[in-house]
Image (cartoon, rainbow, N blue to C red; front, side):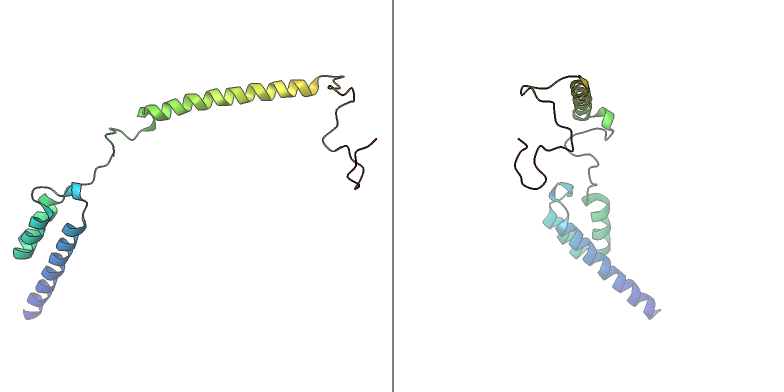
Length: 135
C-alpha cells in the first residue's frame, strides 16, 4: 500500500511540474480565463485540481487556420486561383512563342542579314582549335 502512495505522489509531482512548465511556455494567445501568472499559482497551490483545470479551461486550443482563412482547400483560396489563371496564360504564351520559333527555323532559304546560310548547331564557325573564324 505504501508503494502505491509513493507512485501516486511521484505521478502527482510529475503532473504538476509538467502543468507548470506548459503554463509558463504556452503561447500568450492560447492562455484563457486567468493571466498566466495566476494559472501558475493555481497549479502550485492546488496541484491536482489546478493542473486539471489548466488543461481543461486555461489552455486554449491551437487555431487550425491562421489569418482568418476559413478553409484550407486550394480551390477556395483566391490567390491560388489567380496564380492558376496566370500560369495558364504564361504556358499559352510560351507555347505560341515556341511555335513561332519552330516556324522561323523551318523557313527555307533564310540567310539572315549577312547573306550567308545559317550555321547548324554543331558548327560554331571557327577553325578546329585556333579560335579564329573561317575566312
